[in-house]
Picture 1 (spheres, rainbow, N blue to C red):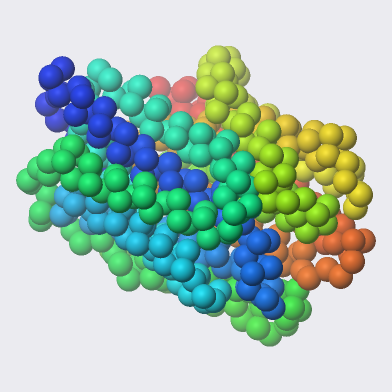
Picture 2 (cartoon, rainbow, N blue to C red):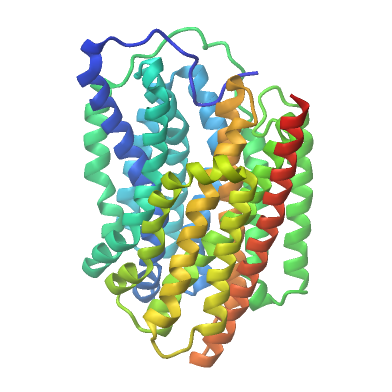
Length: 476
């Protein structure tokens, strides 16, 4: 089987190459940062987009988030396989160029349809640059320094999560288009420097299998059909023929995708990986937890701006305490993981997250009361995310042999993106289009109850993970 987006160990670079390696890391870090940042700043910008595009509903604009996540999830593994075939640097730079150009197109969007199409293009670029960035980092780093380099690479997402709400609020205060414009100079500079400092391509993989692009199309169609049905459920009726037809179409396309994956020589998802109990449990928990996390982030932003009347900047500052907790909690939880085990720590994190959303359900009112109502929930959810997501991602990777790390990490990222799509779609469908503060409160409470249920299901999956890890340890 081919590796996805990661190279085999190569000869360690010499100390004379250290300045070159630092420059390469900065290029890779900048690319990964802006692609992660978009996941957070666009949430803050969504209400401003709705005001700008008169007549656009939340259901329509939700595709600005979901179109990106669907295409990113579907293309992540095929892009990594393509990079193994034609070269990591070439695919990384091409992906960064596509992402940068698409960001400019997003900023220029005259209509929602244009913006959605540009976001899809942006996701295709992100899917190419994300897996190849880790492969290039390992190629440029001596073997002894690779664990630290991987931790630094992984922490970029946490930094983007912490800075995203505040930076998004600052940019939206000027104009929502700036959340996309800011990517352009960073992308251009990274391409110019990266072409000089990134590791040179190595020969030997040109004859690898072609990625299953049709399988990626099937997966995209399956997730899109599910998303349409959920987003439109409030408008069409949850038991309407169109909603039920969308759910049926999604189920049939998913079955076709799984059947094709079982037979293709380079599938989007290597199904044997899902028969590894620890890997399957970790990914199930990650999907369910990310469903809750994506819904939490969207509802907190919408609540602050649409119900409490906060500005975009004030919303970013209000939301920031939760994401800012994630990096220190993630780094500081290593001792707890060693003591309790990853599954139990992840279960604890999901319970804290559920408690934070539950607090909002019980305490929030239509009159602003940030310190007593929103802030406690943000802090609890931040603690929950910091304990849960890094633990689940690490458990999924550790469950597989080193030769399958790249493929497994790509599948885990894909599962999280699918969870985010479903979370946003379900939340939008449950909130609907409320008229008046009390109707809004009722709609948001429906959404929050869903997120609590998803977090509790993730807790059950985390306990399954703990049991699977215990059995795996006993069998050694």
